[in-house]
Length: 146
Image (cartoon, rainbow, N blue to C red; front, side):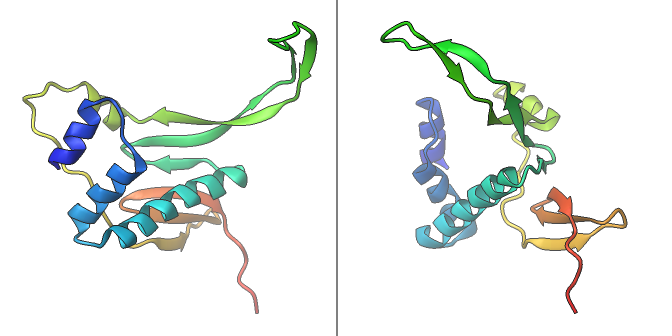
């Protein structure tokens, strides 16, 4: 944990430091921990590609925001250029995360869920929920074949 605290104290967290911490906390190899970290990132990216909102209760949510087309300027020439519309990822921190960030240094840290199996469930509303360590990402359920 000291390595993570030192990394954060320097003002940055790298993927390698995250992988090391996952490996340490879960007693997995760094290679296995890297697969877990990559899988989480890939799941978030894939869900955003599908236009889904990712909600990680107690942490925050990821979603896409649409930027409208606009007129811009070429910084070299000063010529006006059309900037096309685009989607940009947006992260909104949750209340628990904000509270954890803003609490005093002498207060004890609340333990975070580290690892849990992924479970797929379909709710009565017809939405599929992917549950990871007490979090959910919802998407419409795909009807079963056959």
